[in-house]
Image 1 (tube, rainbow, N blue to C red):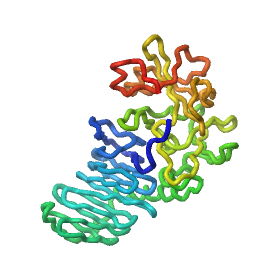
Image 2 (cartoon, rainbow, N blue to C red; image 1 turned 180 degrees about the horizontal axis):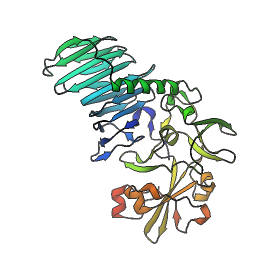
Image 3 (tube, helix red, strand yellow; image 1 turned 90 degrees about the vertical axis):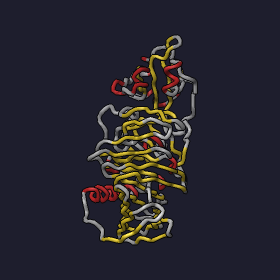
Image 4 (cartoon, rainbow, N blue to C red; image 1 turned 30 degrees about the vertical axis):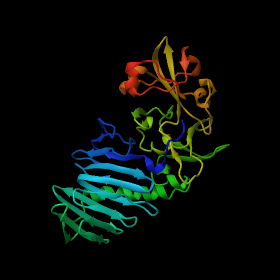
Length: 377
């Protein structure tokens, strides 16, 4: 599958501690999962006792405390707008980051430079604190600049908000969460073995080992259980506009499943090959080849295989390198695939597949129920 978006166009849930929901831009509410993509128009909400982090790109993170609701209004490389509907948000942007504009019911906030800012909406009141960097508070009466160490409370109607400066409150558990995440992202940005546009999302050295393999160069082998294979621990999820997207259960599972490719090395096993360095690497929802096992006009099973580096599309499943590797093929009953029951994925050998294998992508869920036979790619 060809990459469909630059890195800044698809946000994702990088950390989720506790429960949360996503109200999708196209309609419908789903339970939030770590590594799930977020698009413009989506609304993300944490429940009581939960904390979460959304990464807009490797340099900008939005952290949400419990009972916080945030809508992503716009998400383009140079135009990022979010709306804080309630709760507490911390915006963390690193050097070379493009901080988003944050709107509340009464004001708009525009960070002047990378920094760390805490914003809370309670009832009809907004409070803003600048921990690092400066932030502009935009109201109908003009613009105020908040400097590091300053805190302001905004109350009153949106047409005539009243600003009151105050001392910053003492540190709390949410501040501790943010400090921990800052340390992790700093370590990830310092890993020079990853292409610069992707640094800052995952601390790869904490989850695996970097190895140099011919002819691919530098690769990364995750520390996982014996007989582990990529695209097993997680599920496929349909999103309008991007199609089938892999949502990994592995904590490191955003970058390796949406950039680069996988190979099964005879000595080390499965290794991830990073993409070639480029200013804006393309995000791929599913760098895998889908196939179906069809009997008559009905699809019995849906299968997939991770694509190897620079591998073109072929007419036969056996032509793909990873389809010939142990554990390279994943197969699931079609009904389980569409119901989201991914606990019964099988890993047959290529020669064990029944006849009627067709290289074709599964249709979106509503089409499956109307016509069981998937459309061709």
